[in-house]
Image (tube, rainbow, N blue to C red; front, side, top):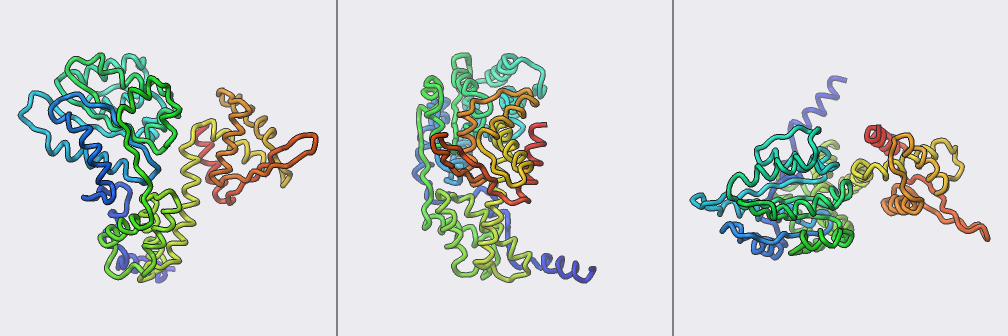
Length: 401
C-alpha cells in the first residue's frame, strides 16, 4: 500500500492544476465585478450621503443566487470606508451580517447579539429579555455621533425562521436614536420576498430597490475566463470547458457562484485523476457532485417543519417495503412527529404545499392517481439515492433532536 500512497501524495505535491484555488472560492473578493457596474453605481449613489453624515434611505437588493448582490454591496462598502474622512465630527460604521448563518438565523435575540458583538459590545448568548438586548444595542450605537449602515444578507432566511417584526423594529430604531442614523441594506435571493411582508415593513425596508438580473452565458464565460486565468496553471483548461461551465450555470438562472464552484470542483476531480488537464468529463462529474450536495444543503437549511415532513416521507418509505405512500399517510405521520417534538402542527394544505416544493426540488416524485368517483390521490416516492437518504436522515435527526 505504501508505494501506491506515495504515488497519490506525489501527484498532489506536484500540484499540476491549480495556481491559486482561492480565486474560485465564493469567499474571494475580486478587484472588479464585471457586468454589475450599473447596480454598483446605483448602490453608491443611494449610500453616498452617509459620507456627510446625512440620513439615507434603506436599500433592498434582490435577485437570484449568484447574481453579484453581496459582492456589489461589499464593494461599495469598501469604497465608502476608503473615502470616509477622519477629521469629521461623526463616525462611519458599515457592518455586514449573513442572516442565514446558523448561529444568528433562528431568533431575533441572536441577530441582535451578533450585531452588538460586531460593534464591540457583548451580551450573553441567551437569558436576557429581547427588549433588554434592543436597549443594549441602542446604547452602543447611540454612544457617539455616527452613520451606521447594516448590510443584512439573506434577510429572507431570518424572516422565514423568526418573523418580519424584527425587521420592522430595526427600521423604526431611528425614532429612538439621538446621535446615530441607521441605514439598512437588505439582500434577498427570493424575488417574491417583499410581496409577503407586512405593508408597514415593506414600506420601511424597501424605500429604494435594485434588481440584479441573472448573468447570461456570454457574461458567465467572461467571468470564468478571468478567474480561470488567475486560478489555474497555464494550458490546463481544455477547450470547451469554460463554455460548458457557463452553459450549465446559465440554465441555473445565470448563477455565477455555481459556475465558479463547478470549475473549482472539476479542477479537484482532474487533480484526483492525475490528469494534466481539466476536461469536459470533469465538468460532468462536478455537476453530478454539486446536484447531490445542493439537495443536502437545502435539507440542512430548511425550517424544522419542512424537515418534519421529509422525515415522515423517509420513515414511511422505509417501512412500506415498496407499498405506495400517499399525502394522507405523510400528514398523519407528520402530526405524530410534531407531537413528539412538542411543535406546532401545520394544516394539511400547508403540508401539501411543502410536498409540492420537495417535488420541484427533485427530492421526491409526486404522481396524481385518479380514483374515479373517489377523487384523486397523490402518490409519493423518494427520488434521491440511498446514500443521500442516509445523509439526509442524519442531518434531520441532528436538527430535530
